[in-house]
Image (tube, rainbow, N blue to C red):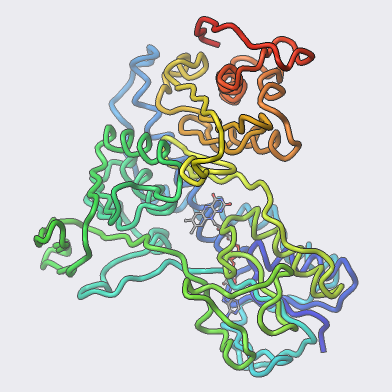
Length: 481
Ligand SMILES: Cc1cc2nc3c(=O)[nH]c(=O)nc-3n(C[C@H](O)[C@H](O)[C@H](O)COP(=O)(O)OP(=O)(O)OC[C@H]3O[C@@H](n4cnc5c(N)ncnc54)[C@H](O)[C@@H]3O)c2cc1C
């Protein structure tokens, strides 16, 4: 019998198994398919590779402006793009050598084992018919793209189906405008597809700061992505004799339709709970479709822990790995450390990119005194040099403590840039300290310092002299840094 069996070989499961193995527990990891999880096989890595290809295609838009002549926009060979994506995924597998890492701490790995499901609280049945026993389990089974049910929904795709396409669909409907929907829309549009992005609510990226939603939507629209807000539901998807589809939907009490070649659903990411037979072991799930955990990442069964997307807590790789390590520590050492939300920057590789850390402005209560500093990329030297002037950096600063409550960036290298704010927030920097950082010039990340100066002015701190914190600063002329 094992001390610990981890279910799922994504970022959470790999970290959990490594940690348990390092601590000397007799550990096994069970993965139904290929190690690496969504992150390596179906999400971050392939999507980032696609976004890079899309970026290369769009770079050519600037050739003329910068004096480079040549033929018109390069042609996209979608099958070859996808072949490159698969190559990248395979290379990452070789570089990561997950099997080797796990073997180095004596973790037994059952890869391609099919769906695991509980028989009782110490026994797990594997999809290949065998059984495995453990004192404790850590469920790291991740999530999947929700499939909506409507007549013809069998013809609709999720982002996972993109990898097996043979050609670029020319007219694409994307339903759902969270991170996945927006990335898919952005990439396919850059490759030359006509894209309609369908959102039920009045804004895309609705969990992000409102300014992020507004500016990304404006940029998408400029690039020809048509955003349809407030649709009430999909009526049906009708296949035509030529292989195209008619997409029927309801909006403003009326039925409308449009012709397309593919419908891609990106309407939520529930946990992979269905195959686990959780009822047999008394593990509870919540209404959102995730496993409920306490502060120690322990489920309603004290011998079973859960980490990563299946808990619905953070839903990003940094969160999944942190939770995986913590769940393993608590499973092996009997609940030593509580889960604490860390400062976790999030972002997406749309064009333009967007990213954020900390609170969105709508999450801050009205009685909390704060200021907002914003610098637009159009007024920022590096962005002007590269003619990448879409976007902004926004810092939300607490007036009393002068600490950063949240940061939101849209624009070139936004996902990289926000990490500087996250590092500042983690080390408790006040806005004037962030404003005084010496940053290599001219870099995109420098926009954080410039925005901190702007927010610092609003807080009324004399930035030049930290030893005079009560000295009010005179208004200064706006300058381009
Ligand atoms: C399109 C897309 C893009 C993304 N981009 C980013 C990004 O850029 N940055 C970022 O931080 N995050 C990104 N994410 C989110 C990130 O991929 C996840 O947060 C992360 O993979 C979660 O890790 P996990 O280990 O919890 O789950 P997963 O990575 O989903 O791994 C779960 C594993 O469990 C296995 N499994 C499931 N059920 C069973 C079972 N019954 N028996 C055995 N094995 C089972 C699965 O096969 C899978 O390998 C993206 C997600 C998507 C969908």
